Image (cartoon, rainbow, N blue to C red; front, side, top):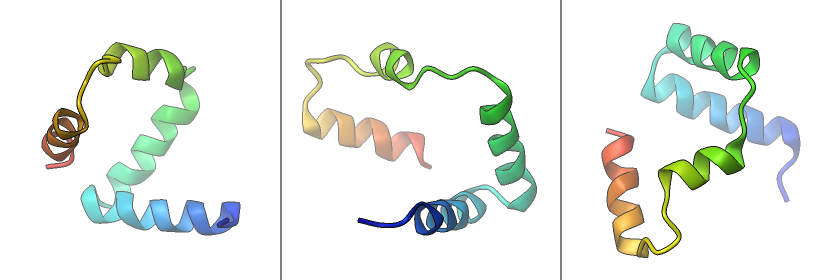
Amino acid sequence: MKTDSIVKNENMIILIDKLDKVDAERFISLIIREPFDYTKWQHDHFSDDISIRDLSKKTMIAIR
C-alpha cells in the first residue's frame, strides 16, 4: 500500500500534467473550499447498471 505522501505526489504530477500548475492549484483550492460528497457525486454521475465498457468510454471522454 502506498503512503499518503506518495499518493499526493503522484496525483499532483497527474494534475499538473493534465492542467498546469496554476489550474492544478486552483482545482485543489476549489475542492478544499466546497463541501464535497463523493458518494452523492458518484451516484449522480454513474448509474448502477453501466457496463465496464460504457464506464471506460465515459472516462476516456472526460479526461481529454
